[in-house]
Amino acid sequence: MPTRVDQGLFEAARAAGALYSRSAAQQLAHWARLGREMEASPSVTQDAIARVLAGQALYDDLPDPAQAVVRVEWEDRVSATLAGLDFTGGLHAAGKPWAEADEDGNLVMRDAAPPAG
Image (cartoon, rainbow, N blue to C red; front, side, top):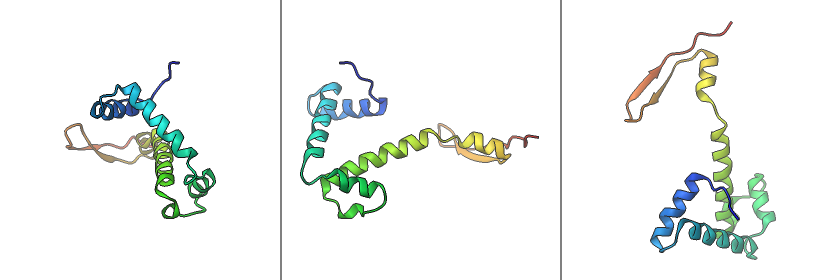
């Protein structure tokens, strides 16, 4: 069954798969099986993971397999948050200048948009 996969994940699967003579699809299937087994493992309890993600328990108290699950969830949450940010729009709206790097790493100063109103 066809499934959409994030481009970054696909590229990572292609690179990792090349090391093990697997296609990107085979590597993704391998990772999915590992994840399924990890979540089914008695050392990885969903309750413990949920408590860490909610800030009610310490990450360091989890066994290594559960820490791996938490790291994946954190990465997904951070990526989703970053994708929703619009710093440029916020700075324009606030009328504030900013600096950023261009493709070559050179510092570029951006002028503030005039305040609205």
